[in-house]
Amino acid sequence: SLVKELMPELRMTESRMLARLNANENPYGPSPKVIQAITESVSLGNRYGHGDAATLISMIAEKEGVDKECIMLGPGSTDLLEKAAITRFQHGGNIVSADPSYMSVMSTAQAMGGKWKPVPLAADYSHDFAGMAAAIDKDTRLVYVCNPNNPTGSISDAAALRKFCLEVSPKVPVFVDEAYLEFLETPETQTMVGLVAEGKDVIVARTFSKIHGMAGLRIGYIVATPERIQSITEKVRSTMGLCVTSLKGAIASMQETAFLAECKSQNTECREFITSEIIKLGYSPIPSFTSFVIFPIHMEGEKFMKGMYGEGVGIRAYDMYDKPWCRVSMGTQQELELFLETFKKVTQA
Ligand code: PLP
Image (cartoon, rainbow, N blue to C red; front, side):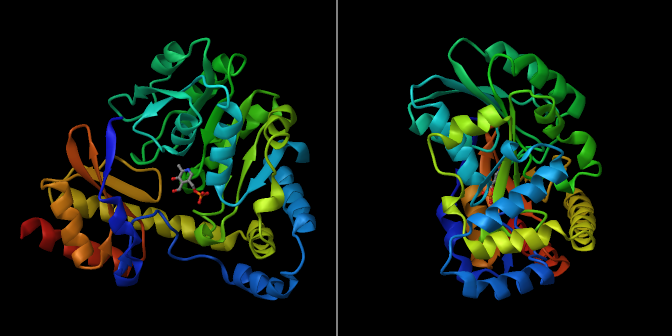
C-alpha cells in the first residue's frame, strides 16, 4: 500500500481533545429534530426496530428512485462494506481498488483470504480507471471505488466513473463508496445510484455519519440490484444490527433539508478557509471535495502527531508517497483556528 497511518493509537485519547479533527465527523449534528426523535424513542427500547427499519428503507428507496428491495441498512456503512466483502471473498479471489483509498473493504477481503490488487491513483489523485480495468482478471470478485476518495479528498470524474461501471459491472460488481457525496456541489449528477435503477451490478454505499452528523449513532445503507442485495442477505442478517433509537433518528434526519444545507455550506466555508490558510503557510493541500483536507508536512510524522496531540488537537497523519501528511477534518471555526495556531507552534518549534 502507498499509505500507512502513523500512530493510530493516539486517536483514542479523546478525553484530552480540545479539537476533534481526526475522524471526519460533522461538528454540527445531529439536528435538533433528530435529538428529539431519539429522545422520544428511548422508551421503545424493549422492542426490535424491524418496523422502523421498513419505514426508513421505504423513505430511502423513494429518495434514491429505486425499489425497496434495492436497499440494505446497516449500523454505519462500515458494516455494509464489511458484509459485502465477507460474502464475496469466502472462496478467495481478488479485489481491485485504487491506492491510496479507504481500506475497509480491502482489509475485510484480505481477512477472508482474498487478494488486494492496488492500482495507484493518477497524478491528480483521481482514479486510474483504465489501469483498474486492466487489473481485473478472472479471479476478481469485487471492484471498490471511493468517490470522493479518502484519505486524499480527491474526486474522480462522474462521467468517467459511470463509463467504467458500465464496462466492468457485467463482469464483476463495482462497489462505489459515496460517504462524502453530499458535500459535493452537485451530488445528484455525481452519484452512481442511477446505474442501480438501470439494473447494473453496482453497489452504492451511503452513510448518515457525515452530512447528517450521526457518526456515533451508526446508520448507513447500500443501494444495489435486488439480486445483489439478496446475495448478501441470504448469508448475513441485515436489520438485526440496528437499534431503534438510531432508526428513529435517521427517519427524522431524512426529513431535514435546511439543516443538511447548512452543514454543507458550513463545511464548504471551513474547507475554503483552512485550505487557503494552509497554502499561506507554504503547504500544498490536495484540492478537497470532502469534509477533510490532506497535505504533506515538512517534519517527521510521529513527532508531528505527538506535538499536536500533546496540545489536545486530534488530527491524522499518514506516510504516503514516501512523505508524511497531515489530514485535518472540518470542525467548528473555533476548532480550526486552534488547529492552525497549534500547527504553527508544533511545526515551527
Ligand atoms: N467510507 C468512507 C470513505 C469513510 O471515510 C468512512 C468513515 O470515515 C466510512 C465509509 C465509514 O463510515 P460509517 O461506518 O460511519 O458509515
